[in-house]
Amino acid sequence: MAKIKAGKAGAQRNEKKKGSMKVLFKTIAPVKWLMVLGVGLAILATGLSIVGPRILNEMMEVLGSPDFTLEKINNIGLILVLIYLISMFLSYFEGFLMSKVSTTITKNLRSSLSTKINRLPLRYFDKTSFGDVISRVTNDVDTVGRGLNGSITSLISSITMIVAIPIIMFTISWELTLIALAEIPLAFGVLILIVKFNQKYYVTQQKSLGELNGHIEEIFSSHNVVKAFNGEQKAWRQFDSLNRTLKTSARKAQFTSSLMHPIINTIGNIIYVVVVLAGAWIAMKNSDLIFITSIITFVTYIRMFNQPISQIGMLAGNLQMMGAAAERVFEFIESEEEEDESDKVKVLDKVEGKVEFRNVDFGYSKDKQIIHNFNFTALPGQKIAIVGPTGAGKTTMVNLLMRFYEIDGGEILIDGVSTKDMNRSYVRSLFGMVLQDTWLFEGTIRENIAYGNPSASDEEIVAACKMSNVDHFIRTEPQGYNMVLKEDSAISQGQKQLFTIARAMVQNSPMLILDEATSSVDTRTEMLIQTAMDRLMQGRTSFVIAHRLSTIKNADQIIVMKDGSIVEVGGHDELMKKGGFYKELYNSQFENGEEL
Image 1 (cartoon, rainbow, N blue to C red):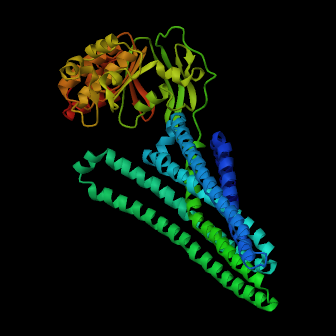
Image 2: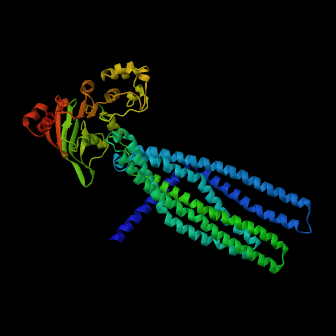
Image 3: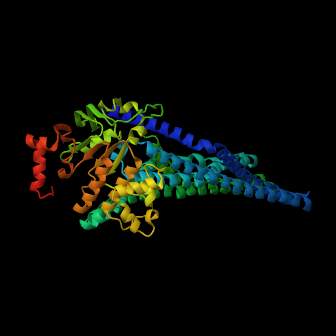
């Protein structure tokens, strides 16, 4: 059984790697020719720099030959200068191109992530913190960009040197070259061993960084609550625990990676000593003075040969970090998206506002169903209140109505047409929403109110603000509707709620969803909000999730939910006369001193 599970896990990892490679090639595609050109320039620049010592060796041989002339020396020197100048310019342009490649790929990755966020179902964010998502978009993408900019070209140059230098060394002495090549299996054996052992630490490091960012985002966004409940020490302990995990994995990763350089250098130095001794012995044995200059050149190449091997050891850590970051980015990009509905073009000729739930079943996970065989019909223009204890399924019904989640069974119909047959965006355009948690962005009041209908005229915006009882407040501000809302703007929760009601009015959708919109304001503000909402609901089918049952006495129908099922349906007076669960809820609020 363990082998079967391991086999399945291995198959899943292979599938993920295949998917990641597809995303990688797709990301690189727009700049592939620039990348090829950059790699080509890197190879040429490296190749020219390798040729330099060989030409210098020819100069030394000319100096020691009977045919020595100053003209020959000048010609060789000129060639040598030109080679190094051309190599320098090629290196410059290669760096420029690879910088452009890395920034373009970074931009494309961020664009892909931004697009992906809008395509992900809400289920994804139920199990992934926003801080972790932000970490993938910022830290992980930056790590990939830095790796592409510096590590890739350095790796190409190092590989070029490892391939080209032995070829030139063979032209000098095949015996010494064979000794020098012994460094490759030894150094790369150490490299492979360390990389294989070390990768898990880099994966843990990037994962821990995402978890730490998630914790920071959570604590900072709820800073007032943390302070109010003296939760600083608990938050610090959680931070310290996550930070220690990050520190441990980063330290192990860096420590293990740092071993590569001294080990490979030591191997290179030992090979260097052996080559020098062997070269001296060959020169003395053959009494060849010309060979002595070749030995000097060969020693230069040995030093150059050690450099790329050592550099690959140093790059291995950066490449592992880049690989771990890229894996997290590609994992996010490859996450399951909402079903593509571009082919669904069905729309309603005229929206009456009749909404039906037929045998609806739903669960946030397959093993935990929370909505069971839900049946209900809302007639056009009716005000439908949904009440019940916490966890009864009130907000879930709204999420299903807006298709934030897909139902497991049954169907939801609007004017007789299943919402599954209509585009998800079109379904959402049929509803205006006013939620308990108000959302305003940094922008003018005018922009915030027109968010759902950017083409709204100034007259429509002002009329909506008057109907929502917020026009007077706006006009008391020096800049009026052009006032820029920020985090530190002196706006109360009630005023924010009135803004969101005005936004829903400007959107002018045929149906409404009001999710406990008055649960967190004072009584006077509640009256203003209630008046505004009554105006907003006129002539519209409205679904109201109510916390204070006194606010929904005039509802056409009240759905009473318990444990994901409807237990009662009817008007306020009718349900009170029944003496069932609704009356129990209503009386419990009165007994607890809530204002009815």
